Amino acid sequence: MVSSKDVAKYAGVSQTTVSRVLNTPELVKPKTVEKVMRAIEDLNYIPNDIARSLVQKKTGIITLISGPLHNPFFVDTTTAIVNYVTARGYKVNVYFGTEDDLDSIYNSVLETRADAIILSSMLYEDDLFFKLEKLGVPFIMYNRKHRENRYFVEIDNVEAGYIATNHILSLDHRNICWIGGPHEISTFFERYNGFKNALKDSGIDVNTVSAFFTNTKKDDIERIFEEILKLPTRPTAICAATDAIAIEILNLCLERGFHVPQDFNVIGIDNVELSKHYSIALTTVGLESEKNLGFIAIEKLFEVMEKKSACIQQTESVKLFPRNTTSKKIN
Image 1 (spheres, rainbow, N blue to C red):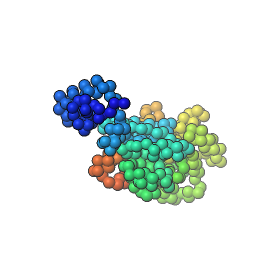
Image 2: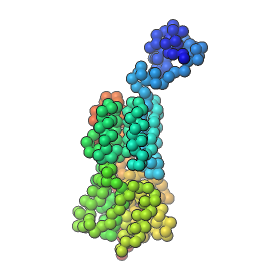
Image 3: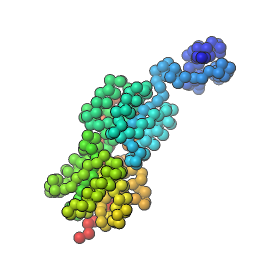
Image 4: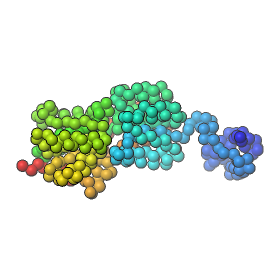
């Protein structure tokens, strides 16, 4: 098999020059580039990405562990991350996972070389955190954080839960319910705490308010909606921990002949692109800056890679985006 050493000998240049031609040709004299490229063609040499990465001590690859694409939040953030990484001249290895298959994904990621890792799959007590630290590869979490409170970009989830709930309460709804996700995930845990704080500040006993917790799959959300319909007193408003849950609730309402916001007020958190669509117009809470959280996180990860930043600990402010799915309670 032809090697870069053979190409260098054939072209009459050093092996380092061959590497430069392959990776940064703009820094090499045109005549030298022409000479090396002719040698590559004559010898039918196929550059080996792995071999080049060993010389450079980098792979040119960023690993992304995203959540499932049935959640529009991950559609938005994955798109932003991949576009940014590609524009920076890197390749992206993308893994889409749920809590059910994270172990196999983690094993694959830890066995594959990458220059950095960005992920939105970390559990609050996840051992992966310490494995990544030991690995020594730059990494950052977005939309979630670990109990160690390092290497993350998130929104202010407690405040988001508070604002969403307070908005519903300000519209005179008192019979409300919460639909959230597993509390092993910091995002869901903190948003529920914000929900409880808003109830407490309004003098409402949390124990008198219905709260449901799901893994956010469509079938489970549908099961919870059926439970809500069977409550002795049907709530007039539903606070959903994510826009993905809220949008699914909107769909279930329409399927069963209910009207939003007349029969149910519905509010979410995240302000995903789909929520802005005029046919949905979901009232939600999201980034005050209206930036994409994935974009913010990947920018920060590159700062770490380029030694411009060390330990990222960033919590973004949030605000309410009132739209068509909430309104004053009709007495």
